[in-house]
Image 1 (cartoon, one colour):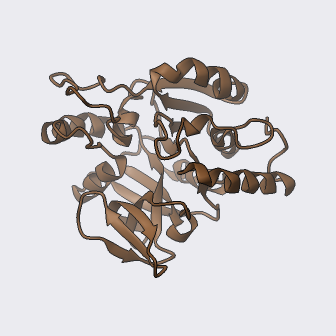
Image 2 (image 1 turned 120 degrees about the vertical axis):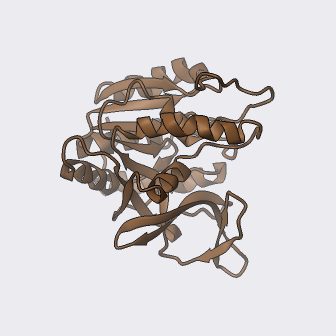
Amino acid sequence: MQLVILAAGMGSRFGGLKQMEPMDEAGNFLLDYSVYDAKVAGFDSVIFIIKKEFFEAFRDSIGKRVSKLIKVDYAFQDLNDLPAGFKCPEGREKPWGTAHAIYAARDLIKEDFIIINGDDFYGRDAFVVAANYIKSLKPGSVGKYANVAFKVCNTMTENGSVKRGVCFEKNGMLERLVESSIQRNKEGKIISSPLDGSAPFDVKEDQPVSMNLFVFNKDLMDRLNEKFPVWLKENIGDLKAEFLIPTVVDELVHEGKATLKLLSTSSVWFGVTYREDKPAVVKALKALVDKGEYKAGLY
């Protein structure tokens, strides 16, 4: 089983490359905890998707640490990595999105895999739940995807809005996934503002949301090869448009080409969407170490 970590973001809202921000006294990053938990859950290799210009710094810090624990590969998300016949438009600076990030690893993904964000802490149970789902599938399964969903109230920050995929399900299976910006209003209600510009709507405290912890079969790479050129034809002129994995999954479900099972976890999420979030994350990690869930220094 492969772990794919999306770590190419510049962390504009955080104010730096947040994937490489120490979060404990030993200098470990949130990425270290994710790889550690994934290894315990049974994953045997990790692919870091990063920007090429950060490769040496990334390899010499987290890469060298985790390579003692698990097989490590790197893929580079590049604005010019496009299908034949397409060229990156002048003025484009924003990465093409999470689905493009996975597309960047197309030559490295060889089996069922999961993806996670590089700047989120998911908790060990989330990885165990994902691993158990993969183990339950028949060999060679196609389009049997899953998402380890969190309650929206457990995925928010007091320091601003967060991007989440709002999950609408029936009998444990995804019916619709709406990529949204989510924030509490002055009245304390949680408001979801879809990124496609459609009307905002209220969500309940226990509404399941995607934190981009998806389980995929290898056939997803074929689907991305099919959909990316179509998306580019429609959106390449928009310098801020993103080819997002939640949107791709939602389309595949509606087209009958995939199903997505929603999996629940007892894990508690935390992350560093904004620099002001860091003190709370450092405190939470220390509490887990003090409880004995992780050893001091981790490795």
